[in-house]
Image 1 (spheres, one colour):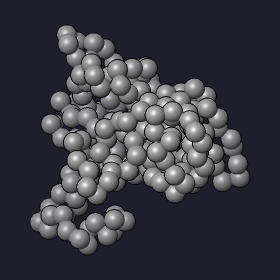
Image 2 (image 1 turned 45 degrees about the vertical axis):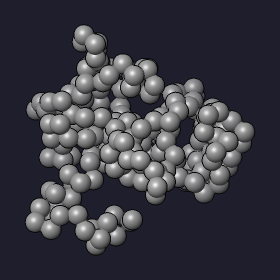
Image 3 (image 1 turned 90 degrees about the horizontal axis):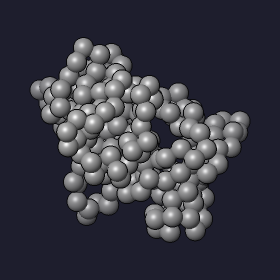
Length: 207
């Protein structure tokens, strides 16, 4: 489980294609010394298992549905990557609950400064539009963001300068595909409006 608060913006150092997928080597000097094999790390919002550790780098392996649902298979060398280690049980939840299981890819329609903030307008796939709402949470490339308004094909999010400067949004461009994960609690309300969140639901989600 993650919070959507980015710890470091790393860089893709190497991408090696294999029979089942891609082995990604990520340069992340700030968090690599604190990572061990088997740890979970959110890589642009995608939960990945660390399979190799170095002093300033670590490696993960993206396979199967991960490559179909996310942008990990199309990352270019030196691409900026949002990184977050898994939340400790005794940690503070300052963002929102993020599972690292991406629902779909969205597309940046507009990205521009508006006064003191930046406006990010996203195209959201129709199949998950019912899971987003104004002032609700949305994980974009692993970043916990709040939806400011909805439009017929997606949503608008206001981005404060700190978030832009300390995430991959600093390098975002119009037309870019981004990983989206809708809010877990919102999805549960839609699928089980009368039951609410319970242990059985969490077990079906793999927790």
